[in-house]
Length: 463
Image (cartoon, rainbow, N blue to C red; front, side):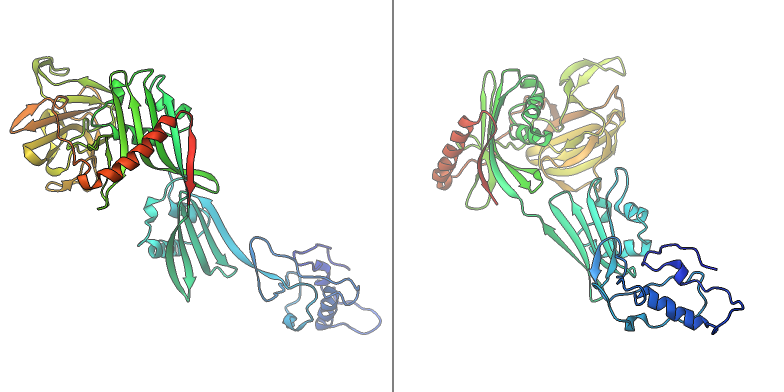
């Protein structure tokens, strides 16, 4: 009676391991050990003359000592011989490395992604705890790549987390300890010219030229003290800029600094040149050396429209009575970030009647700014905390007496409200006399590049 012929993963047929039942027959009686010896000789190709090598293992492999795994299903319970002592035929086998790779899913977490790939919770905790001084697992972003490598016994070898395409966090096992490191991927820097004309909006025009919305925002921020792009830009206006772009082997990664920019409106031209003085102070200046920065922003939010202006007599949309509206209402979607218009101190944070959720900031020279109808406050914002200009302090909402989401922004000087849109705020410090010559050299070079900016063009590239 012969066993079923089933080819196993290591090349040994099942019939070679099957022990036939004992029956009456002529000749010597074979013991179990004798049958096993025959099977071993067959498996090592002594009888049929065809050499066999151990089967290759799957997944990522590392060279190691050969190991022969012999299935013992349907075999007698006899102690196996030391197969390592048998002669080695063919190349050495490879020991298996267990590799887990993936990306953080949208709406998920890095810990959850690892757990979903059958990584044990204790190991996840050890990795997270080791890497925490450099990176918090809770800050993982959807789409970020990770990889985990263990040996065939499940012992941890290494873990990598790629934050975007710029930063790689790594944890390695060294002498039984987990050691975390962080490395920045070197990027290629390119200086690019870009120019165009407004068709419908600045954002649409830049996107049609292949640029992203964050470059649009950076450009608008340069002139935020002098120009309101949401209301004052018109079709036919022109824009030009010289800026940095960074690339890796896969392509574009991120924008760098805008080195110079120009916006030509119907009635006025706006020009900005980036300049760093000998003291390390970096700022944007007009061609005549005056700072573009003001002590106060023109608006504390990126808004879609002004829904209500400063007025001494306005029909209240909710109360239906006429009363003063001593501020400016900026309509914007719920959750739009609200900025501090200037450096200052938080003097109030809480609910206040018709304002709903309200924040008050005290600034130099007797100014106090109000931010009303907020949906929520910035995390960890506290009363008596110092804030800087354009720091996010809250988010647009419709709390209090409001018919829709907007920011009620007000400004008081010396105890009385003023129209924020009509206040002339002082400029920042101009270029010093000692730096004037070097500034003029930088300015002339950048202005020449701006004049040449029509289609996008790479000016220079450097690591």
